[in-house]
Amino acid sequence: MSEGSDAQPISLTVNGEPVTVLATPSETLLEVLRYRLGLTGSKQGCDKGDCGACTVLVDGRPVLGCLTLATLCDGAEVRTVEGLSTAAGLHRVQAAFVRHGAAQCGFCTPGMLMSAVRFLETREQARAPTREEVAAALSGNLCRCTGYAKILDAVIDAAAELGTRSVPGSNDAEGAR
Amino acid sequence: MMPLPRFALARPGSLEEAARLLSDAGAEGRVLAGGTDLLVNLKHGLAAPRLLVSIDRLPELRGVSVDDAGALVVGAAERLADIAAQVLVRARAPAIAGAAGLAAHPQARNMGTLGGNVCLDVRCRYVNRTPLWRGSLGGCLKAEGDVCHVVPGGKNCMAALSGDTVAPLVALDAKAHLVSASAERWVSIEALRGKDGRTPVALQPGELVRAVRIPAAPPNRRSAYLKWAVRHAVDFPLVAVALVVDAGADGAIESLRVVASVLGPKPRVVAGLDRFRGERITPQLASAVAEQVTRQCVPLPNVLYDPQHRRRRLGVMVRRQLDAWVG
Ligand SMILES: Cc1cc2nc3c(=O)[nH]c(=O)nc-3n(C[C@H](O)[C@H](O)[C@H](O)COP(=O)(O)OP(=O)(O)OC[C@H]3O[C@@H](n4cnc5c(N)ncnc54)[C@H](O)[C@@H]3O)c2cc1C
Ligand code: SF4
Ligand code: FES
Ligand code: FES
View 1 (spheres, rainbow over the protein chains, first blue to last red):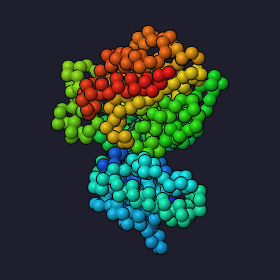
View 2 (cartoon, protein in one colour):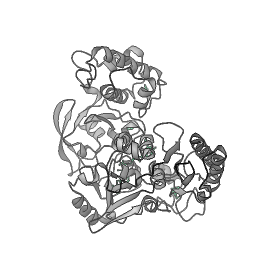
View 3 (cartoon, each protein chain N blue to C red):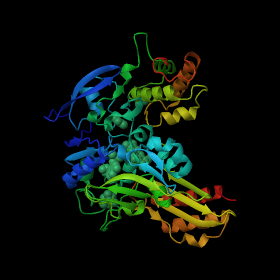
View 4 (cartoon, rainbow over the protein chains, first blue to last red):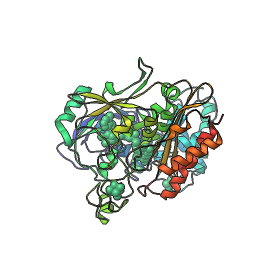
């Protein structure tokens, strides 16, 4: 990250909080989150689009922080792993990861969680997701440790729990906790 | 960490302004769409534009519609994930929806656009690397050097066409609407792709793709896009093929188009398929077409995996798809 004279302020909503932060044209959203805002949950894995460790939600959609220019996020709503838990405790998907032992080194986990959260919030609520649907939703997140089985188990479990507790058809993030 | 080089970034709000910025910048400017390929190439030091012109705020490049002639028109800035899910595209050009849904992975499809896919740079195991890696071989024709490691002694770069939508767009006879500050024109997707990997896309300086137009399909059309890669997600295609068959009411073939990609820089339109006109699709025909495709299409050692294996895969994909259409 070079602190050049070409840094300009941009405004983001990060995990519900409005923030104004400097960014140069060449800075990625991931760099701004990690190095300017101190949000190091999103990981810098390959830094070139292959691994998904940097996955964050921009205006609701999972994108790669490492290939998103921060300046182009001016005005956007960004959600990162830091925004998942509340004072009341872990997000359901996080809790399911813990129950299932779905993290080993944990490097892929923040990205996995963000893809999973998006999947759970937008899927058809009326029926349980299939293993294939979950695998497809997480197919842009590589894990070098777990072999994926426990991660899929955790997301399916979180979906089952959501299905019984949330209003059917609700895509609301808060309601889905 | 793979930092980006320094560049200026413009975010115009109209096509006119974008075209002017690109024309003023000339060779120093580049269109930035989803950035899922361009930014990786910049991180790899394969280009160093002074100005990136983002097209994410151009309403003229958005939308999917059907024109007066029944053709499907897709804005160049439409994202792959949306194209894959779009009802109009799925109904009118299922092979394009399918190809868009097979590219990359969910996050890249949420970012990457059709225009970026059609204008995707070619790929090669010797060039999509860090400068240090490339430097250890002294570079190649496409970057920093003067030899080709894929075709020793070759004068052209033979890196692989890798955009998943290109082969089906060519098979469906699609055209791109190109716009610059001073002119506009329509060019077939086939003609848009260059035969030398150093100039993979035949855009004039200052030109950008506004939309892609896919002509209306006749009533009995079947189309498919088949991609082979080691993983079902993330991977670029290692070999791929699009098939389009138009038949009469009696099932007799009126036209058969097969377009292969990931060979060299250009899509390969398989020649001589006219001889199957009037026949019905049978297992024998499936084998004969597959053999003709395999004879004409020769993958090069430009991407990972054994070229002979990729060539056999291509034949198998063609035969199986036609077999599925028997009757
Ligand atoms: C891990 C990974 C895997 C991938 N796998 C695949 C895959 O399997 N198949 C596949 O097809 N792609 C793949 N991609 C590449 C990419 O995501 C897609 O091809 C995508 O469609 C590129 O579009 P973009 O909008 O991101 O293009 P950009 O990166 O923004 O641009 C690509 C090129 O097109 C030019 N360009 C873009 N839009 C226009 C326009 N409207 N007019 C003129 N020029 C334009 C740019 O200047 C640049 O040269 C992969 C990428 C990653 C990171
Ligand atoms: S085909 Fe040859 S010239 Fe082109 S990128 Fe590969 S090694 Fe370089
Ligand atoms: S760090 Fe972004 S995809 Fe690997
Ligand atoms: S837990 Fe180590 S990469 Fe997934």
